[in-house]
Length: 299
Image (cartoon, rainbow, N blue to C red; front, top):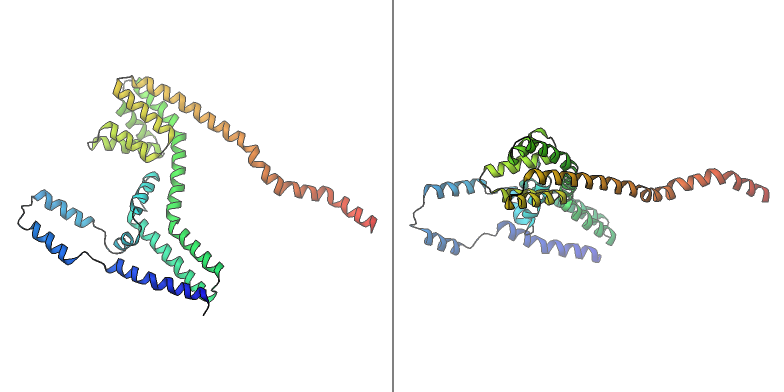
């Protein structure tokens, strides 16, 4: 038997007990009995009963529970952070995302094992491992890409949104009302984040906490700078209209500088396609007939 088949058989043999333990392992019955005895006789309020019923209803079950059990520690927190950066798409909640990661890895690994069994070579095994790892992390890569695109849209929309808020504040509206108007009139991700920030404030969060949560969700440098300026203006009593006007002018200047920087990068990016694709064809067209004539003359 080839050594690669022995290695694959040993890996499967070692993984099956771990899979069985992760599926069927349960807390110790003696520990459960002790906790039940300690809690017996305690008076429970209606509010605590309702909270327990709510947590039991929201407890994961089925494939979601299996995915949480098989996923490494910290996966749920990392996915939740990526979902927040991507705007929390309605079609991809956290539970579905975790199940999708697990299913993609299992399907890719199963197909890879079938291919390895037919062609047991080191290259095939390496390709199978790489494809399985990529399939497992594919949803995270897609979410990260969507989050970057969303942050770029927020950075582009920030200057215009601040201009609208400045006009609204100078017309006599408060900062929250100006933010609500900008969120209502806007249609991009920045408008959605402003509306969510106002909802956080209405739910009882302080303004500082709501603004810091906005900066954490978006992870945009310009927006974080604006949030810090607003927090300082609120703390020290600075006129919010002056802050908005200054920040809008600064964001507009930064947007123009980024556009100029991208324009200056174009010649450098064009060099490699020019050298690899255009110049060889041009040389063939120009020098091809001359080379053919030289070869004919000397032959």
